[in-house]
Image 1 (cartoon, rainbow, N blue to C red):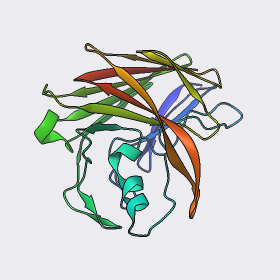
Image 2 (cartoon, rainbow, N blue to C red):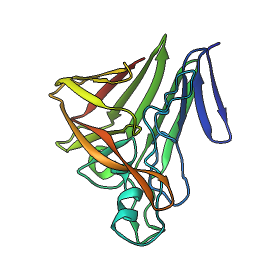
Image 3 (cartoon, rainbow, N blue to C red):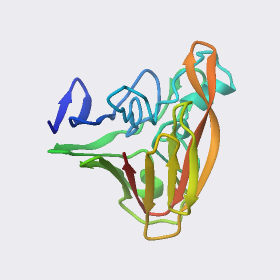
Length: 220
């Protein structure tokens, strides 16, 4: 069975083998807009998580709280290391990025937000599935020389290996490939995945530096 569905603010694409859980919008005082919630949760039939939301381990007004609220802690694109929405304190949000486009069809989901409008215009993200592949395309409505970074946070059991400038392979056999009209740079870093209140687990993330547009293909 292959189908797309939009229900209660959650847009999902599902097949008889792999399920993709995708959503965009406001969450509990967070700044992610076109993020995947809970990120790109690609699950095998046994339910093993792959790319995940970093979660929330604390509500105290400290450095970790600011990191967990930031755009770069979500599986989305950051521009010049800035947040999509203005956040401060433990819960406050100032100027909020707005979703200006939400469309879906058979096996295709697309959305856009204005969080970086002064820098790149609208940021659009498109999801499509074909067989066992998930394709994500990020574009901006105007070209400017900015530092764009796509963030991918992996579950604590997933180890990634950078094969070359355009691809990685994970220890679960999943491959990811990246294409752009200009040079791409892949960087592996570590982050703290929230497993509960005041409980985190050291996990891996991938940062993809690009300009203007990026095509990500996840091969299951």
